[in-house]
Every structure is written in C-alpha cells, then in structure tokens.
Amino acid sequence: MSHTHTGTPLYKGVFFDLDGTLADTAPDLVAAANLLRTSRSLEPLPYELLRPKASAGARGLIEGALGYTADHPDFTQLRDEFLNNYEQAICVQSKLFDGMDELLLDLEAHQIIWGIVTNKFERFTFPLLEIMQLHHRSKAIIGGDTTGFSKPHPAPVLKAAEINQLDPKECLYVGDDLRDIEAGKAAGMTTVAASYGYCDCEEPVEAWGADFIIHQPLELRQIVFK
Image (cartoon, rainbow, N blue to C red):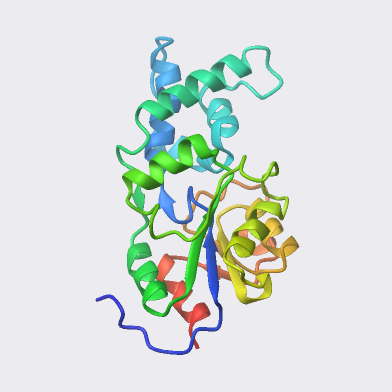
C-alpha cells in the first residue's frame, strides 16, 4: 500500500512529537506507573484512566497513579523509581500508531526530511528509537535535554530544522499536546494537532490554535501534498 500518494510536497520537513504522536508509548509508561502501585501493595489502575496522563510524562503519571504532585516531598524519589521502571521495560508494547509507518515511507519516497522533537530525555529517547529501528530513519532526534530547553520553548523545534538546514517556514510540526503547538508556532512552523494522541489538556484540541487537526496519521497526507 505504501508510496501510493502522488502530488507535490508543500513542505520540506515534517517533525513529530514522539509519545502520543509518532508512537503509542502509553502502554509501557502506564505499566511503569502501575508498578509504583503494585510494589506498594496497591491495585493497578485501569489503562484507560492513566493513558491521557502519558502526555505529561513522569509528572502526569505519578500524579495519576499515586496522587502526588511535583511539590510533594517524596516526588523526586518516586520519579527516579518510575523512570527506572520505565527504562527496564521501555519497548514491550510501544509501537508506531496505525498508518504512521506508511506515512513515513511516503515522506521518505518524496525526499521529505522527517524527525522527532520530544520532551522525553535522551536517555530514554535514543534506546526506544533504536529498538523501534527508527534511529537511522529520523533525520533529527531532539530530546527534552538536548538544547537545555523543553517545549513549549521553541529551541528544540528550531534545532531540528537547523541541523537539517531547513527554514522553519518550510516545515510542519505535529504534536498531541498544547505545548507542541505553542513550540511549533513560536518556531515559525505550520502546526498540526494530533487528536488521536493522549491530549490531556484542559483546553480541547480545537482551542489550541493549530493550523490543522488530524484524527489519524494518514490524514497528514492531505496537508503535506497538494
């Protein structure tokens, strides 16, 4: 089915958020959070309840699993334990969202550069992408600690364009969180909100101010190609 799309590309680069946009990593993140509970003799929480929290990473999942916010005295220790749990089983059930590989093959077939800009730290991002065999295909891998800034700051998004010598105005940034849209806009890119992702924001996706909204990965074709 791949490479079926013909048309002229309207963009030279497409950059994706990782968790909840490019890959469905929530099953492994939720498992790491539920391990915090079961190791304290608490029942695991339903996946559906914790899935949206994955967009806020460790902070969201610890709060979801145990009700502790970042200002709690035990938070730092819990975060280390959570991240250790996650690191031990980082790619058990994580996979690309349906249609995403087909989309990436389309981009590659048209020589459109694609890359990843995530708030996930490099220590987790690189091993995960290596296991998923995406590390050679992605032309930028920018983690939350790569530039010294994390989204909504535009620096990580700008870095992805810069290392590929692309004008941000010729790029798309796709994400499933308000922070992604804010970062993409601040970087001067056209923004796409992925409504199929975790989207755990107060504001509905429609209120984020993205240039486009997609409900599944292959809808990006209509935006990239004319």
